[in-house]
Image 1 (cartoon, one colour):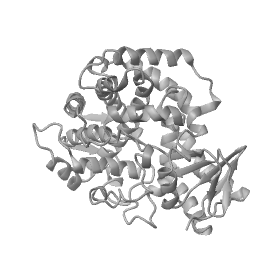
Image 2 (image 1 turned 45 degrees about the vertical axis):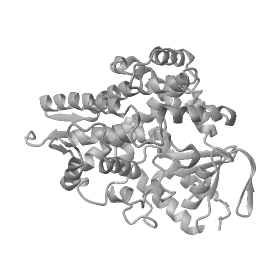
Image 3 (image 1 turned 60 degrees about the vertical axis):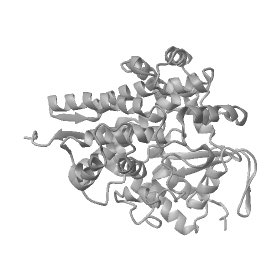
Image 4 (image 1 turned 120 degrees about the vertical axis):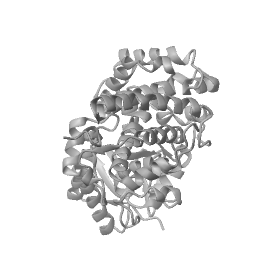
Amino acid sequence: MTSTPVDLNPADAAHVVTAVLAPLVAQGAIIRRPRATAWAERHQTDRTARRVLAGLRARHDGAPLVLRLGPRRLVVVTEPSDVQRLLEGSPEPFTPASKEKIGALRHFQPDGVLISTTSDRRYRRPFNETALRPEMPVHDDGAAFTDAVRHGAAALARQLHDSGRLDASTFTDTWWEIVLQVVLGPSARTDRALVDVLDALRRDANWSWFHPRNDRLRAELGRRIESYVAMPEPGTLAAAAHAAGSVTAPGQVPHWLFAFDAAGAATLRALAVVTARPEVRARVLAEVTPGVEPALLPYARACVLESLRLWPTTLVVLRDSTGPTTWGERTLPGGTGFAVVSAFFHRDPDRLDHADGFAPEAWLDGRNNADWGLVPFSGGPVSCPGRNVVLLVTSHLLAHLAGHDLRVERGRYLASDPLPATMDHFGLRFDLAGTRG
C-alpha cells in the first residue's frame, strides 16, 4: 500500500537540508569539487545522511518526506516501491527534466535528452538508443572501444613503471584521452581544450540557475564537437550518432562526455578495492583471455557496478511531477519535486545484507538488479542508454590496471568490510609493490 506523504516539521526539514542535501550540493552535482569531496570523506557525510533518513523513515513508517525549500516542494522518498513508481512513471507523469536539472544542464547541454520536453524526447531518446545500443552487452564498435582502452592502459602502465606511482590526476588525464577516442575518435584524443571548455561550463552548472550561462563557451563547445561529428571517424560513438541522425548528434554528445567523467571516478574507486583485496584481483584477472577483444568481463563489470552502488556518482535522482499526483491519501500539485538519495538506498541495511560490503556477486546472481532501490544507471523507461558502453570501457580498463601489482594508500581501510561510506576518489594514490621505501 502506498504511504501518504508527510510534511516534516521545521526542525526535521532543516536537519534533512543540512545533513543530507547540503553536502551533496557542496560536493557538486555536475562536476565534483575536490576540496568539498575531501571534506565529505573526512566527515563521512553519506553515513550521516543515511542515519538521518533511516530515522525519519522509521518514525513515519516509510512515508515520503515532504519539505519546503522556499517556493519549492520536495518529496524525499524512503521506500524502494516509491522509487519504482517514480522510475516506471518516467517521463510521464514524472519527468527527469526537474527544475534543478534544467537549471544545471542548460549550461552545457541545453538540447540533451535528460532535460528535453516530452515532444523533443520522442525523437531524442530513440536517437540515443540507436547510437548507444543499450540492448547489446557489447556495442557493435566494442572492439574499437576496447582498443582505445588498451592504448590508454598502456600509457598509464608506462607512467606507472617510470615513476612507480599512479595518482588520480594522472589517471583522469588518461581517462579523458580514452573517452575522447571512444566518443569522437583518435584525432580528438589529445583535444584537452575541449575538456577544459566542458569542465568550465560544468563548474558553472554546479550553480544551476544561480549562475548566468556563458554562451561564448557553450558555442565553442558546440563548434568543437561539431568538427568531429560532421565527418566522424569509424569505430566511434560519433560515427554511430552520425548514422542515427547527424542533426541531433551535437546536442547529445556533451551528455555522453559528462557521463563518462563519472564512470572514471567509479573505475578508480573500484581499482582501489580490487587492489586492496588479492582474492578479488585474482578473480578479475581470471576472466581475461589475452587476444580476445572485446570480451564481456562479467566479474569486472560487477566490480564497477559495486563501486557505483557503494559510492554513487549520481548523488540524487530527481523527478518533477507533470501534473497533480495522488499519492496515498494526498494529492500533490503539478511541479512537485521528488528526490531519491542514492547513498541511502544503496547502503540500506534493512534491505541489503551486504550494505557496507563489497559484493560483486550480488550483481551476477540478480539480487541487486532486482532491487528498485539500487539505481547506478537510473531505471525504467528513461534509464541510462549508455550503461553497457560505459561498463564495457570501465571493466576493460579495470582489468588492464589490475594486471599490475599495485598497492593503494590507506589500503587497510579497503581490505575488509565495512567499507567507508564516503570515498574521495581525488585522494586515491597507488604505487607498485616493492617500490615503497
